[in-house]
Length: 205
Image 1: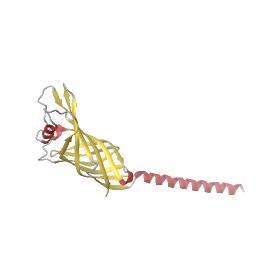
Image 2: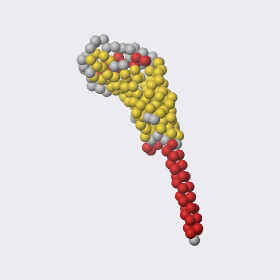
Image 3: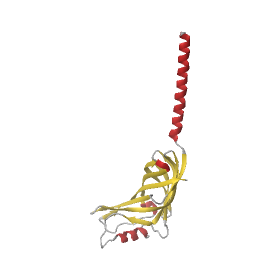
Image 4: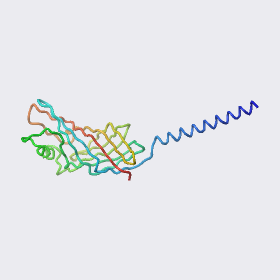
């Protein structure tokens, strides 16, 4: 009788172990996620830019740039590849640091000409992901025809309802891309770093 009880116990324990092992395997597989590709939509996607001046008066200009196209490859909610292209002619200031003497249109013209991004000759900028580690993507940024390796940090991804929303931050030194303009006023310094807040929204392909 004792032998039967012991045997039954061993069978039950074996079954429980087997079930637990399978559940662990399934959970592990599910945590990796399913590979999927997303086409980035121009509506809802945007890049916010910001540049700072310092000196006697400290202020920043910021605004938006529109997306032309893009794509993201994901495995679950982890980005594995992708790229996006922005329309440099769509530079739109959103701050309020303007006056009748220095209107918003003046800044748009200044950012668009040879002093800054020369948008007639280089109408687009592009970022292509080369690798991803954690919430940081390393890739090639091309601005004004020059390409350098940069990083997008603080990446967050949501895929609720089959729609991907990915956000991240990119800071690049404008001097590396031939944007070397300096403020002629000795007491005003234009920062070399340009800050980008990126929001990409897309649907499964």
